[in-house]
Amino acid sequence: MKIVIDPTRCQGHGTCAALLAEYIEMDKWHYPILSRNQLKDSHLEAAKKAVQLCPELAIKIIE
Ligand code: SF4
Image (tube, rainbow, N blue to C red; front, side, top):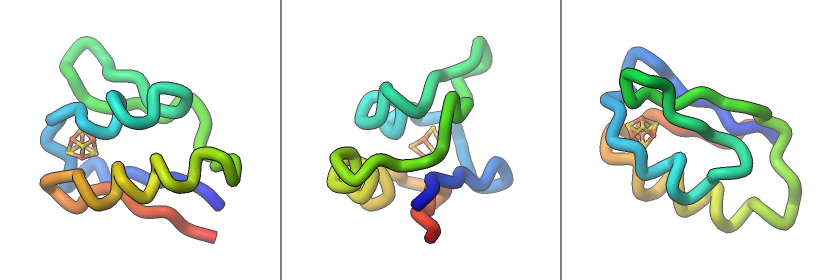
């Protein structure tokens, strides 16, 4: 599974980086950068929470 972020939807709120620090860093403009996107099973619940809490519906988990 992979995490993907749609940059056309993202507004830089940063919730995702707080929940998935192992995968997402914020750049100097406060937009997320995926440092890796292959999701470990052990991080799936945190990733699902990031999907649910993204106010812009910009995050997806794909196979
Ligand atoms: S939580 Fe959503 S809107 Fe906020 S930075 Fe992450 S992807 Fe962008």
